[in-house]
Image (cartoon, rainbow, N blue to C red; front, top):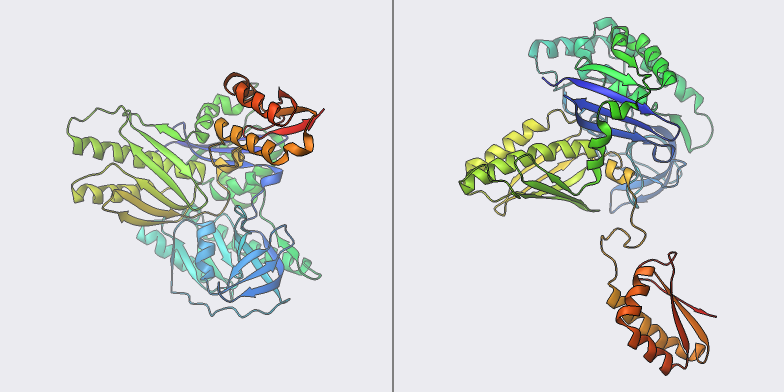
Length: 491
């Protein structure tokens, strides 16, 4: 079993959280004021309009973008995905389609953050997460996490759940409850119920109104990740350290001794060798130990991953080499998806294998590799073209998008207009606008890179433009002008 630790670095501009397994970075979370996740927040919203073709409604929740509310979704499953990776229900749940009218007020909860031009996804079925349980406000189900694999333990927790479940509400028993006493679980259920009624009573006034907000990233991490499988939690902020110990004093006093305040002069992320590992997060190409590598490309529609043997030569037989590289790649892919928090449709271009049983083996082993991932997966098969397809739940912006921004020159395409094409654009500009500047002194401002290219390779073109339009033409490199662009200024 891996020795797992949580390391938290708190600064004035951001909070960084790392989950380590035997020193290897497994999960990484970054919270800044401008990218605070809204997943789990509850609002009293106002219905703006109904979209019959989508069987959905757009609701005003008081944010920049309106919420998207599907009318015929299964809300319970939506929320079990947000708070627990895999939940087994006591019985099937089939809600009736929600009937809504324009300007109607409705209580909703955000299940997925805004992504690109899309607004947040919301549901009208509400759940409040705790350390041991998730309280389902308007559902009556009882579920037990499948991560609790011991049958007797599961049956015992289900029995406890039936005894403590509030009337008219439901419960999901979380993994951390396996090590908790029945009275501790009941105490949390009572606290969550009381807190919900208090928050609801305070949400007065016309919609949109905020009812409940998820805690900050530090307390959320303690609630969702800091269980008996974690050896220690290290944090370098004394203020947040006190908040954690106070929180654990209420919900799990036995875990307080595992929280360590880090006050060494050496930065905490350097001490645990996390900074070096973080540098790899934005790399497209990730090398494998065998010499093979994978390439990850994230697009609006899907994530494409290519597997290559590279310099790998461990096996002499082609089939064995391909199988070995694919298995090693799948292990790294499972880690990278979890680490970068990449979601949506994922297509992996594996190295082709001839034997069907080898393809089946890869799918089986991948299912084992993703057991510790809290996101929900839907696994497809491997096609005849060697493409492995699956989906991973996406509830928030990926770490890669949080750490980077779209290039202002290529606008995210990864390529820019060639210099020769830009010369063509310049030539056409003078053809269309030459009469308005005829006989004047003109300055052509471009990026320094393009200015050098024009002077070295297109001096004849510039001289021809000057002659045709009776101009005094001068080229000037300007760092404020992007590659592929230009400005014409009359002096």
